[in-house]
Length: 112
Image (tube, rainbow, N blue to C red; front, side):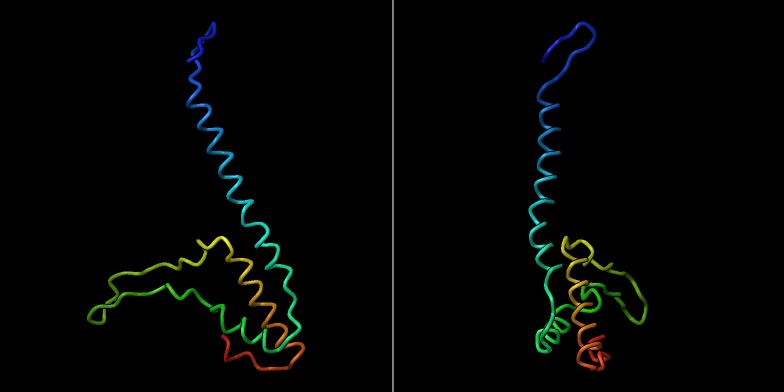
């Protein structure tokens, strides 16, 4: 502890706050190359577009209503938005579907 003329400063608390801020910044920067790679994927192949459209679900598969004897007793909310790459994956699926419609002229009703 450092004592100044007017107040005491506790260094361990100050240092831990600085470290917490530094760790948060590093975690978000860690995924940046993956985000950039997903955003830069260009789709020029029908098979790849179909694979991506099938691989990435249109809705969160974890969202559920728990029903017992015909009555809803609980709801499990969608957890997909907790995924740090959610926006990039949804964008990739959208680009794949757009390719199938615009370039291939396919009906994408089966992917929805």
